[in-house]
Length: 87
Image (cartoon, rainbow, N blue to C red):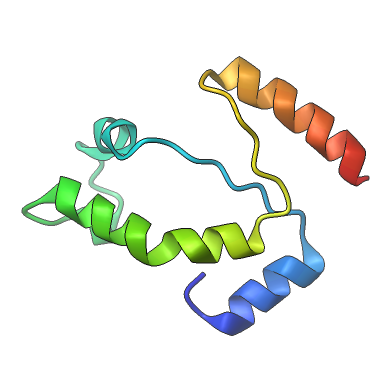
């Protein structure tokens, strides 16, 4: 995502769905996840904030769709509508 070439390919060849979540929610979901090397730090919350700050504009740049909603069902419903309009 950080490389311009990667973003160019994503924008040109794919439908990119940008899912968002509050940092506190991401923290709760990943605090015990040992499979993410970038998150193996002494201050996970600060790391998540930093990654979000550095990457958010890249995700927004590539996004074809950005569904809204707070529940999985609401997001799925929004995606169905958005994907139907893209095709």
